[in-house]
Length: 193
Image (cartoon, rainbow, N blue to C red; front, side, top):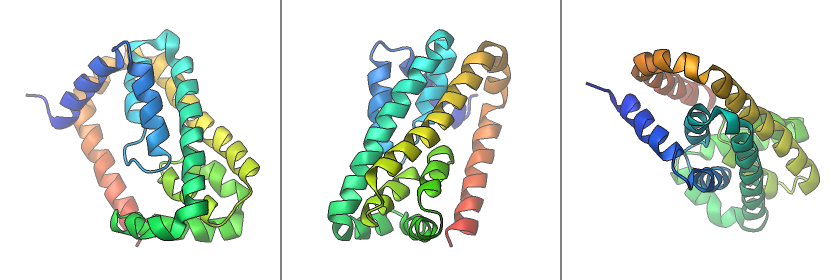
């Protein structure tokens, strides 16, 4: 019997082959950068796997939509931080937001670039950048480089290795999924508490 991650993977792979999949990917990428908790990689990877020839196009869609969503997060932080901060804290991102603020004061532009590439909640950095009134142009440029590097790397690796790696991925997907969950929980308690 298939575990939850294998079933989710199979569902996402079917969704990735849908004719409107690029629109769904753009919507998810936009939403994740400012308020939604699920990263676009979960849709980008199966789409690149299902259509390796279009992997770079999917990475471009993801990058553009993610940066535009980041600008929305910036605007929300700039104009309404005092209104959204209680919601951010209640959603469990309070620690990430405080960490983002501290890092901005120390590293400025570079923290956006690193946050865009890393699995750290990017939305916390978009909101904090606006809340601290970081200049918009450097924020956008760092977001393009950070997010673009991440999504193009993911698309290239999955698109290149997809057909060769897929049988192994399916075989060990549930182990990989649970290991990832465990690592995220550990990272959450180590870095955010």
